[in-house]
Each structure stands twice: as structure tokens, then as C-alpha cells.
Length: 322
Image (cartoon, rainbow, N blue to C red):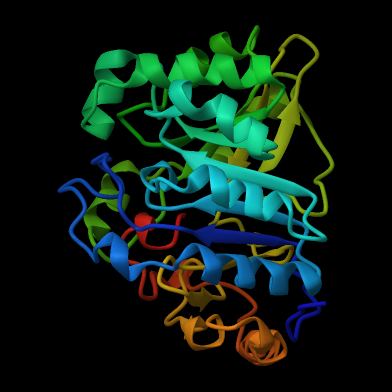
């Protein structure tokens, strides 16, 4: 099984299938996407080979992410490839939701288990101000369709001081909505360090408030993401907190990232990627690919450098799918 020098094992692969995103979120791509064309990203056959090797060496969950993965016309096929990969038990997609009502049924039929939907505000005007698009209605419609289809739904919101930090607004919604609302602490990136200064809120404060109001922590799944999740008997929904500045955040790291251009990233805020693409061209290269990945894991550090304001090569979150 893929493991690093600290004994951490990697059950979870975040696989970016494109860097392109059509939204202009203030915390990620406020000026819009300006990067490589779609032709620069991994082909379907390369992605299949990559998923097969990770699954053979212990990965049990694959998340297809971006950019905005629904921009790829073959997303349904990629979901099916992940589902049909021996060893993969859970397939997820992260999306901004603008195509969700149209495609959620076909994604579910292809084998999708979970949708992570970015909704930074439940107010249409504020949603548009954050994302640059008036698409809240489509996202919420798609969310309800996903729940009806039996998919697990998690909603992501970057929790920003002075923008969408009215916790009670989200709590009211969760009383009757059976989703996990995950708040993500603002992280500093290379593109706009000033954004962090203006909008960062320590989610440890929110955690303390939740505990005082009777929310109780849940035990994490082996292949779960980084959120600490909480439940309350009076609410249909749950809350998750992603707190990268907490002192023990990296001790339970169980995930690796591969960029849309085929580079292995040991951390969202690492200082470089390891090019895997040369070993994705033929089926008989699997053992060599596995050896390259395991060798790279020897370089994985105990923790990221965010506390020292070291953001690595991450200019914006769309580079690696967050």
C-alpha cells in the first residue's frame, strides 16, 4: 500500500481532470481562468491507467475535481471508469453545480456515489457577488435532484469574514436539509495574500460555538476527507469544519493529489509536483509508475507550511482542485 515515511496510508485520491473553471470566485479565480488549454490535460486512457495503479496500491476513494470537472464532456465516462476500477469503493465529484440539474441522473447511472457542491451563500445576490454568476437556483435544484437519486451530498462554503460568516443563516437551512454543510477556512495562496488578511476566520471559534450549542463530533471514515464533522439531534443536516491551521491537521492525512497535467502533489501547498505522465502511456508501465509514486512519497513532509505563510507553488485552488 502507498505509505509515507510517517506511516500515513493513502486511501483517497483527489484527481483533477481539468484546471479550467467558468466561475470567478473571489477566493480562487477572481479574474477568471487564464491557463493551459483543455488539450494539455490527461486523456481518458491516461486517467484510467492512473486510477488502476492507485487502486491496486490501496486507494479506495477517488474524487474527480478541477477546476470545474463538468466542463469535460467525457465526465460521465470518467465516473464510469472510476466505478469499474477494481478496488475503488467510492466515487465522488466536486462541482460548482451549474450543470447539475442536467447531468446528475447520468452521473448517478455511471456509478457516482457522492457530490460535493460549492455553495458559498444561500442568498442569490451574495452568491453572484462571490462567484460572478447568478446560478444559485441551478445549484439548489441540482442538490435536491441528487438527494432524490440517493447520492450523498456535501456542500462546501469558504467561510469569509464580512462576506458569508452568518452561521445562523446556514444552520436554519440545515434543520430540514439532509446534507453535510462543510465550512472551509480561508487559506493563504500565492495569488492574493491580502485576501487572507481581510477574510480569514479561525474555524476553531465556530467549533467551540457548535459544541456549546449541543453539536457532537462524528467518527471519521477511513477514506474521509479532512473535515471534522458534527451532528445534532434537532437537525437533518450535519456540519463539517476544514481547519488547515489547526496544529494536528496533517497527522491524519490520507489523500494524495494528481493535477490535470499528470503531476503528483504530496500536499495542496507543496513546493513542486512529480511528473507521472511519462508512465501513463502504456498498460505495461504500471509497476514503474507505482515505483515512481512510492519513491516520491519519501519526500512527503510531516505538515504543510501555512503557519509560516509558506504556500508552496499554489497560486490558486483551481490548480489542484482544492
